[in-house]
Image (cartoon, rainbow, N blue to C red; front, side):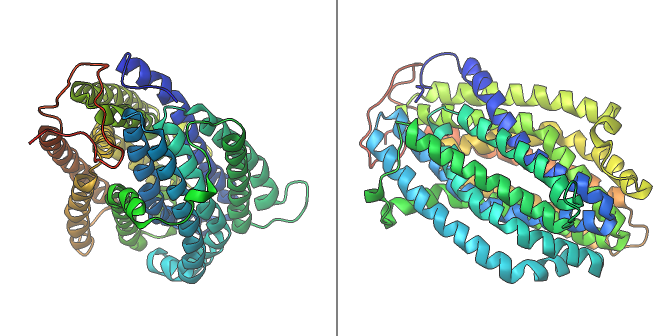
Length: 468
């Protein structure tokens, strides 16, 4: 466990960001590897896998409920020097991860085909996406346990083990993908089913490695079977922080589903191009997101310790670093998009859509970086309801206009991306305003506001806030 209530905030951010980035890039690379090898199977396969991957946003919503709640509450406990509460939250989160994983498997088996029918451009895309989802669902179910284990470590400022595990899982996925998808060396090509199976095997191995790390190395939080009995009060503590953050990812799922819906009339090539462009955009956004994720446990520990000035300083410095990183990748996407998109498809129409998407949407990378940073600050404060408010606003200001516009004469695919930029910019402004208001309510005045000072709080108490 590392004490983040003392020392240079910039140094803490810069130390934690690279491993977090590596871990997230590993996840994205798994998806890109699937698309890369599936591209040889045709546009329907690419569009199906890309559209099916969007269902991951909905599952990620549930993962965020656990991850955000775990990080915030354990970080607060660490800031209060309350190890017992940190362990209790960790073990209750493990219970929730098992239940959520089982629910994912059941719903995936029942709803996969219905989901694909609602978004796919043709029957071939429906079939490809459904098969991929059914084989990919075990990976999503296992990700809940991975999320809780990694989040507990991140709350205590330990990020390297999760990064190493993610990197090894990616290596396994990259090795298995061509073998299972194309039949390299075996002559038994599973197609899109092989893409899902490769990911499921890789994530399964990753979970086993993290479990081994916790049992043999990790000491601050640990498995305790006596704490696995569900305790409603503490489960609700996790859910109260996590549910609004999970709602944010649910809004992202709706946002992406609307995009796929309005692209149906442009054909499978348009959906495939968007899927490729979206994955690449997600990859180049990862460093800014990693900065925001690194800021969350720093701010969270300082909220628990009552260090209001350090919480504000964490936001300012994280926002500046994230914006600087976002500008760099935005310039790259504008000047050399071919470096980012090379090799994903030989279809000219598909790649034209991907190039157009990346050039336009990359213009909102700074706004998206600010959204990431604000979201992490709300998590650290233990109140994620404003995150959900800003996400709902983005969906409404995008979905309603784009659905209306898609029915009008002269509707072009560029309109889809331009409306997205407008909605994202509005969300960034709203998030900044909501965060300023939350800082005013929760951080001023705090009883101690010097860097390094701490306030002892009883374990059952909420995060430190202004006295009445």
